[in-house]
Image 1 (cartoon, rainbow, N blue to C red):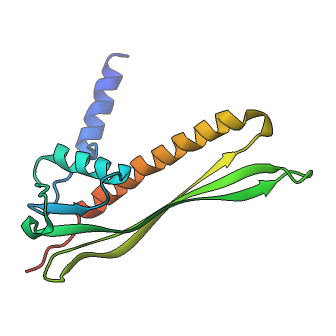
Image 2: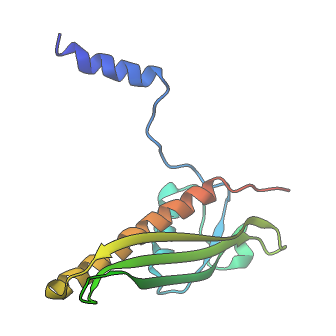
Length: 161
């Protein structure tokens, strides 16, 4: 009987239409990504698009069906709370990314869009190096999350005409 329970659960999940979210192909046959050469987010975005295999990444915007233009990217850090002695207890990390997707004729596939990710991090004067490392890890995690959000938004972009 116990061996039958996992089988029944699997059958129930497939019967309800549940399936893991996979990657969706992008609606563009070619996409030029206008980011700086040193942009980590741009490199991660290119890697994800290449992994899909359905969209080409040309070297110039003239060869592309659509152009992904970065409007702005910023990392911000602000004090979230202080202790009774006036020492910092928590920081708030923000990662802002603004972009648009258009073509050379001026058509907008995705209008100017800003995504803001926020994470809170505790702080301790005794663990400054560890907290700086943790901050770097949080920013890297936020960047990976940002790439996934941008990929999902690119996948649902509407191409007209």
